Image (tube, rainbow over all chains, first blue to last red; front, side):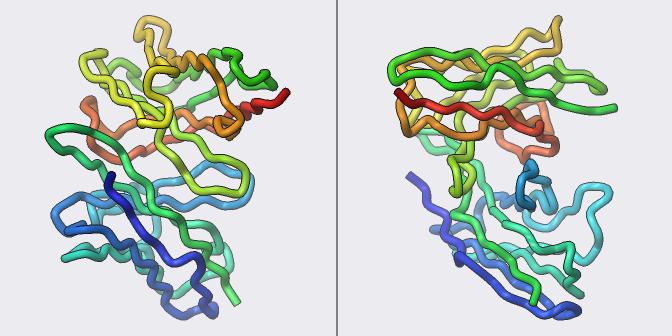
Length: 110
Length: 121
């Protein structure tokens, strides 16, 4: 089955840029979605289709996807961005169809 | 208000059954695909099952295939998950999530608050 690998944690100072990677075999050929989840809350979609933002999500959140790595970038990080972030793809082949989530990355704002 | 509200979670013994429900409101339920995602305590998100808007397509994770059944009633704006032969490893918060489109392949743009399922003797 398809595997998405994320770093367990990323630490960043307020005002700096956080980059969260999501690695997968030829992930650049798939559409990648990103979710933010704060403790005790449901996930929230922050980027879809590699780089699009849902309404209400700040422009500070952006995404890219190429080759074997997709990246979620959070610019001008704020204390409120501290959360777990997970990537997701739809993996469709001749013998299976699955949604796959990444292992998740905890972003800590120093 | 656009929202999803799950119900039906609880404590069940191994081998038991449980039926989760998800009540949708504030949008045209019949035009969206729907999904179940779970999260074991302290773990990441795990996709469980998806159903297209018109019931034409249904998919399951290998971990629940043959034990869980997803269904929907568009007239009642409701999504369901029938869980049979439950195991300890099924213990998790179960989220109902809306797909962005009618078919199954896109992101989940709205989530419920989740319902806890605990499988223990």
